[in-house]
Length: 115
Image (cartoon, rainbow, N blue to C red; front, side, top):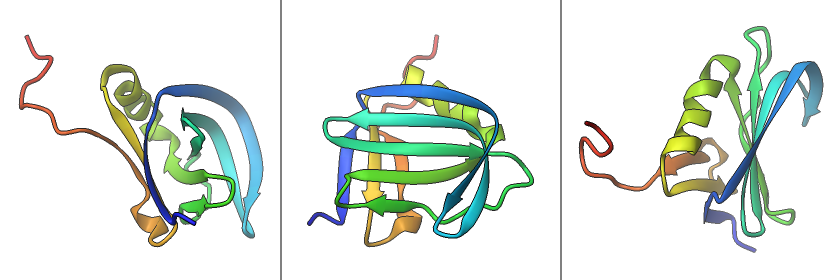
């Protein structure tokens, strides 16, 4: 099974929550928003948590082809701005090093999209 997978994010969905308490491997998380990023058969759910929340380590379920990242709610606008305005955007699922899970753009020339 692939413990490392990089996939192009083709679609995303934003889900806002008033406040939802969720449990991830024994850690209770205070979720305010979820951004679901999908590409082909792979998914990464990015959970945006409030300031009082515990923040679990990222995780990748290799069998389900699904990753989970946890960021502060203050980062949600910058994150969705990247999804709206950059292309391509990639999800990096890391079963070998979950702390290296990420979402990234491709290399771009300096100043692209400016003036």
